[in-house]
Length: 324
Figure 1: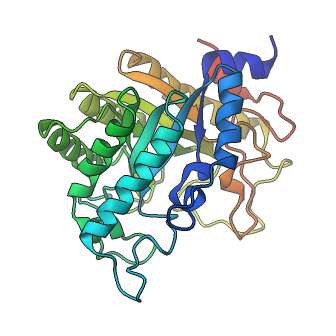
Figure 2 (figure 1 turned 60 degrees about the vertical axis):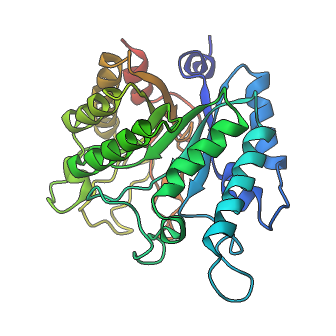
Figure 3 (figure 1 turned 90 degrees about the horizontal axis):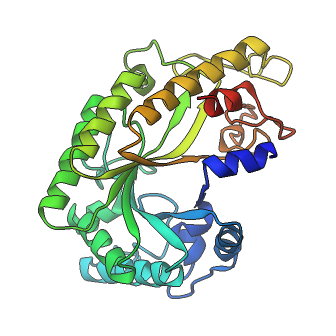
């Protein structure tokens, strides 16, 4: 069996990411463009892979018309709610029977456990929350369930290892479930680093296995599925200043660093396997180091976060994940 086939046999899920975001599927109102997303979904179906749809409602990557009234002002509450329902209904119905799970709402909770609101700075604020209030989350799940009653519906977020944030997510999810909102699971974005930060004010200061374990226990106590949705392990340590002279290259990605990255992958997968009754999926945020979002910053910084190298050969991290 080839390495690629071996990986597929163990992790047979793929996420349709940028191609399914709002601005990609509906750049202008009521004009849906599915070509790119269809190619990914059809490839997965033909190769017996599961598809997670990402993401229906998010504060980022939205078309300019979405929150506009067309006259230079903000869209009304009723119109925005109608637009949200129209988008979710069209997209989910288009992929019904092919996409088994959706990240319905993405990144609605801040690091301190509060809702992402409309009062934050551009790039961070949620126009959804600003115009519709926190009720937009429940409505998004209801609309998705209405469009495909068989799909599993997830809330997806990052930094789940921060205690205040995981508690805020738990409180939100419990509130939704108490209202009878059809939420089936929670996705843990897992953009980890080769080691936690030593800077106490940095989010990655909390990036320890024990903290993530608490999140898994907390969410699964609600009867929800837990999935790891965006897994990679960066070589860079948050809180450390890097420049062009200290950016990693193929030459400086030493055997020692490869072993350290593999050990980091191993400790997280040991955690995932301990909670295999709650964790129903693990999805990597890429396949090989030649194509990763972590190497797409304007600084030109190269990263090596995945299981396969630039030439698609397995790294020690691959062996650490597969050897159990």
